[in-house]
Length: 379
Ligand SMILES: Nc1nc2c(ncn2[C@@H]2O[C@H](COP(=O)(O)OP(=O)(O)OP(=O)(O)O)[C@@H](O)[C@H]2O)c(=O)[nH]1
Ligand SMILES: [Mg+2]
Image 1 (cartoon, protein in one colour):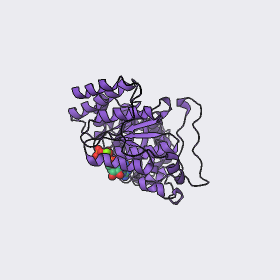
Image 2 (cartoon, helix red, strand yellow):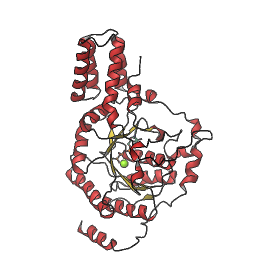
Image 3 (cartoon, protein in one colour):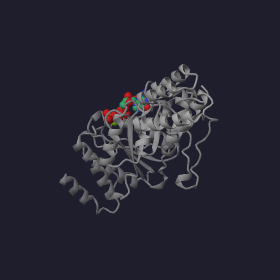
Image 4 (tube, protein in one colour):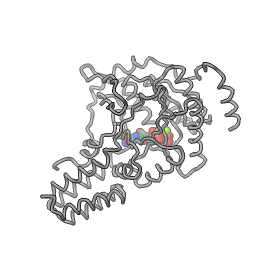
C-alpha cells in the first residue's frame, strides 16, 4: 500500500505523463467499426448540442455480436425485439398464463397476480403496492373487464420503471470514466465489450482498463474484446494492483485525448470486506487525477439472481457508491421481476439491460419496451 502511494507521489510532479504501456496497439477505430454498418441502414445521429438531460441515446443499427461479429455483415443478423427476447422469461409466461386462466374480473385474479409477481422477484414492497392499488380500483368498479385491469397493470409497471430509465450520457467529462463493478460472473466484462462497441459506433474514442487483476484469464478476455474491436486496452497482468492499473489507464486516456475510459474490476462477493475496500481505493486513487472520477459507477446485476440482488446493491452502494445499474441475462428463463424490485428499492438509474449474449442485445433501458415485452397490450 505505502509503496503504491510512494509511486503515486513520484508520478505527480511529471508535467506531461508519458502514456502507460499498452499491450494492444491502438488501431484506427473508424476503419474497424465501419464495415458493421450496412449500407442503407440509418447512420448514427451526431450528438446534438442539447444539454445532457435532453439527449436520447441513439438506437444502434444492427450492430454485431461478440468480437468476431465485426467481421460479419450486420445485415445478416436481424435485430430481435424486446418481446422476442423477454417472452420466454418466467415472468412473461406467468403473466400470460394468468390472464389466459382468468378471463373474468375477480379477487382470485388479483390473488394469483400477487403470487406471480412475488415469484418473479418483483419483491414484497412493490408487489403489495401494486396489488393494493389494483384491488382498490377493482372494488370501485373502475375496470370494465380483465383486459382493463391488464392495461392498468401495464401502466403501473411502466410507471415504476419510467423514473429510472435514464440513459447514460458520457458527454459531460473528457475522459468520461466508467467503472464497472459487481459480484462474480454477472456479465461485467461482456458488458464492457458490448459498451465499447456501442460507444465506438457512436463515434466516441474508448480506452479499456483491465482492472480485474485477479485472474490472468480476465485480462485476456478484455484484451480479446479490445483487439477485435480495435480498442486499446491498458493492462499490467495478473496480480498487479487494480487501482494502479486503472490510475495508469486514466493518465493514458488523458494523454491520448480519449473520450471514454471503461475500467473492468474483479468480481467480488459483496460480503468480503477486503475486496470491497479495494474498490474504495480505486475511487480514492482516481480522485488524485480527477476529483469527479469515476463519473459513473455502473453496477452489473445478473437478472437471474432474484432478491439477493437487493443485498448486493446495498453493499456496493456502501462500499463505493453506485450511480447506475445494468441488469444482464434477462433473456431466456430469467424471471425479470428484479428490475422492478431494484427500481422500487433504490431509484437508481437503470442504464442498460442485457437481453442476450450478442452485443446488440445490450439495450439502453426502455421502460415501455420492457413492460411490453413482459406483458404485451391486449393479449
Ligand atoms: N444470456 C446472457 N448471457 C450473458 C449476458 N451478459 C453476459 N452473459 C454471459 O455471462 C457469462 C459471464 O460473463 P462475464 O462477462 O465473464 O462476467 P463477469 O462479471 O466479468 O465475471 P467475473 O469476471 O468472473 O466476475 C458469460 O458467459 C457471458 O456470455 C446476457 O445479457 N445474457
Ligand atoms: Mg470479468
